[in-house]
Length: 250
Image (tube, rainbow, N blue to C red; front, side, top):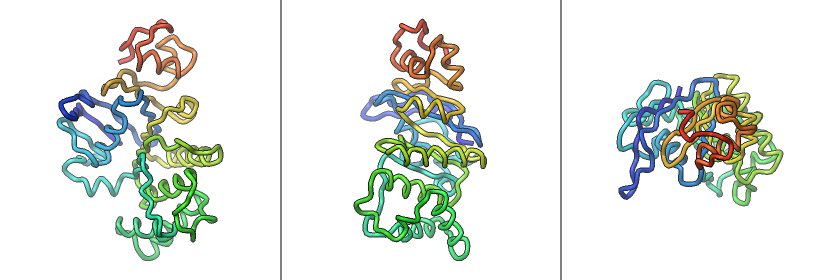
């Protein structure tokens, strides 16, 4: 489980995250929605240990991220807003390097490489250098890097941004498989249809705070709307056209 408890973060005196609290259970997919600047990426980076919260606590698999960052990263897969590929390496070389950084070697390394190669359909890319890869190809490799050590927790920052239909379908298929295996998954997105299809629960952020939390159907029912997009607009922007009173879903 990923647990965020009363987390706050400031940049240059501005409150970016305000008393943020939520959890992502094992074997569930949770979507993080919010307008640009709502604090989604900051939240994900704090969970990943890339930023330090000013106050509050974040734990992954029961381990405090601030106290045990290395142990947490062994339990966590991260697909960020930048792929970070090493363009002079082939896909196999790149994944071998990151597997080694996780302490995977010998027969376990061979099995890990074979697993991500099959699951993410990397055969045609395996011996190619990553320079010049399309957005979909880069996503595949980034996801393979995040999964190479078989983490029990996965966070993704807008993973389908810029993907074609086939690449987006493969990503959704992979996330559903991981959920069935008990992985706790948290992803941010602006694609409402994707969120509605994948998510067991949805967190709506506005100005650094959670303003809605529930299954897609619950948010639509309680806000009196016919779509997740309308619910999101009512919560995140306070538009009252749907009859929703802002903050009622807290």
